[in-house]
Length: 372
Length: 173
Image 1 (cartoon, helix red, strand yellow):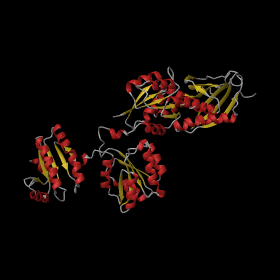
Image 2 (cartoon, chains in turn red, cyan; image 1 turned 90 degrees about the vertical axis):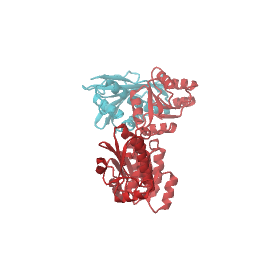
Image 3 (tube, helix red, strand yellow; image 1 turned 180 degrees about the horizontal axis):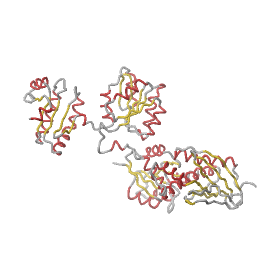
Image 4 (cartoon, each protein chain N blue to C red; image 1 turned 135 degrees about the vertical axis):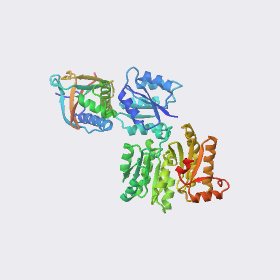
């Protein structure tokens, strides 16, 4: 459920700045332009936090804070003062009434996010979006690596052109880049000088903006000591050199909670095509299976009558694949869809070896299957 | 003639410059430099308008009162005010005719600037509180001081645009 923040300030500009600062977070902002409106909004909205100015017409922030803390139903709401008033006497007076923090104007967006993040759990909006992003949607990946050759591999290694790799070579640059642009995934080389990769991980994690960003450690495959250190530090996952980009794409898709179904499912013309990869791992089979019922149901909803399961690139048919195909056939039967198998001679032969699949008709092409 | 405020002039200048620079760098990511500074003690001395222009002008002012009283006018051409508002709010397409938004943004910039200045006064023992901002629009106007106040006029430059921070200040009765 979204968190809610009430900003009480007579300045529309400040309210707009607050709203803009939290655009990337799952935080609903409600507003009041003075203490009276602030108290009414606090009662109505029951926010998780109030950002409160002091100098306001009608009722100032000190009076509103005093009334808020005297009200049993509202006094639990944490308050952060956001004000240009920072005189010692004022600050002491307010501190006695009870506040969680004090932000003095002028303030940077980062300070605001950091202080609010200490009071409420700020989650990036991408994480809570009902509609998951697809593999082919834009994705910002920041690589922190000081070796140009490896950086170049990353620039050209991914198969999705919409994935943008921002290469930085130092921790300072990484912090600046992460502040300027929300990164979806961060990959940090642990071979940076002075152990700065681990330090950078800790700095990023302590910032509410990156609290939930997937951060991978990039290390040499055979370096077991670094593996253990990366795991102990709390990296989301580990990428080993030499980099297998196919495997890395899967890890990124999982960590960034991307919808990977388009890798396997395609609605084409009047049929749904399900394609298995060349050498599907158990993980891949489970992944495809996770989408199976939803996609077949969608095919019915869209008025499709045929489903083609294409396994012609498979080197061998194993029990996991057979079980997956039986599931697909079962769902199709339940929804009165016709299901066709496309394979090759070898798959045809191997299918006959299993009791469950010996009666399958295996077509040699999608076109041949659709002609029947 | 002796000054009304017992704060050395160079300190007062430093306080205002740091208050203005703090707001411009933090909120607007803009460089700002002090071009020159003028000090005047009498109404006659301060009659000449510091920022008259045939172009539309905006002056945002915020006062402070307590152990010390005063008022600061941030005065600039409307085109600069629009530029600052766009920068502050990240609204590149904001129209010059949107007076409400520009007024509000300028009022807030003045509030932050005077707040920064006033907080430094408080740390020197002159505790005081801010007033709410107000906006003055027009062409060829001047702001004049009374004989009871000390006036310090600061001429700033921000990336090629000029503006003035005009301080009127006096101690409490």
